[in-house]
Length: 427
Image 1 (cartoon, rainbow, N blue to C red):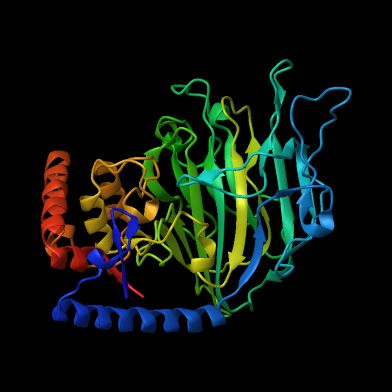
Image 2: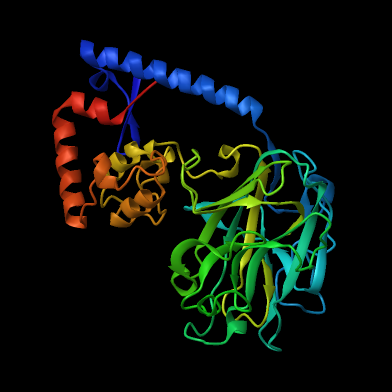
C-alpha cells in the first residue's frame, strides 16, 4: 500500500489508495528504487561512524558526559563555574580526552539553555561567556580540548566535524572600533600546538584584529574560514555580521587528509538543511598540510559588546549524514534536490510546515526566502552545470510562486494521478 504526503500531512483510507494500473506500476518502480536506496544507505552507514557527540549535557556526573552549569550573576551563594577544568567522558569514542584547557581569561561556562537550528533545539546546554554588566568586566574566554590521537602528517582518511554557533551582536552596529567586534572564532590548533598558541592555527568566525580592514568592523565583516595555506580569508556567506544578527548556524567541516605533502583539503558547509552532502561547499581550501591537536569552542577576546557568542552540539564522524542534527520529519526537502523546489512551490505562503516540507529557513512560513535559500544550497547540481534556468528551474517572483502553488494545489486536488506523481511515497 502507499502512503501519501499532501502538504506534509499523511492521509490514509480507501479513498486515497485507489490507483490506476499505471499508478500501481509507478508505485512498484518507486518502491524498488526506495528499497535499493535504503539498502545502499545501510551499507554506507555500516562503514561510517559517529565518533564523538557532545551536546553539553547538564548534570553532576562527568562520567556520564555531564557538565556543571552556571547561571549568572555571580553572588556569594552562586560562585562562577567555568568550563575550564571540566572533564566529562563523552563518546561514543574518546575522540577528545582530558579536561577543557583554558588560556588567558576563563570566562567561558556551560549554560542550561541550548541553541536551536531550523526550529529544532539541541539537547543539553551550550557554552558562552559571562560579562559583568555592573563592573563592565569579564566576557572573555579561550578554552580548548585536545584530541586523544592527534591528526598528524601521516593521518589518512576523510573526517567530518560539525557544531552549532551563534556569534552575537554589537551594541553599536556602526562602530569603527575593531575591539567591539572583537575575536569570535572557533580555533583549530595544529599537531604540537598548544591551546592558546597562535602559530599555525586555523579559525572559523569573525575577528576585529586581523585580516582585511573591512572585515574588522561589524557592518562589513563576513563569516570566514582561514589558516596556513588557504590564501587568505575564505568567505562562507555574503551576509554581514550586522545582518546575521545573532542567527544560529550549523557549520559542517570536511577534512580530506593524505600522508603526502600539501595534499589535504578542508571544506566548510554553512547551514545545510539536507542529510545529503552538497556537491559544492560554502568554502574550501586545497593543497594544505592540515594537522590537528586541539580545538576550541568560540574564543572571545577584545571588548565585544552586545549579545555573547554561543557554541553547541559538537559532532565528529566519518559521514556527512551524522553531522546533521534532527530537523523535523523527513520530507522532499531533506534531500535538497529538485523535489524540494516542487515542495516549496506547493506550500508557498503556508505556515506551520516542517523544514522537510518547504520551510527550509525554519522561520515558520514558506516564502520566496525559502526558494532562494534552497537555490543557493541545492544538492543535485555538479560544478559547471550553469544557472538554474539552464536546468529548468526559473527564479520566480513571490506572486508567481503563490499563483503556481494555488494552481498546483487545485490541479492535484482534481487529478489523483498528478497528486500521486508529486506527493507519493511508497512503502
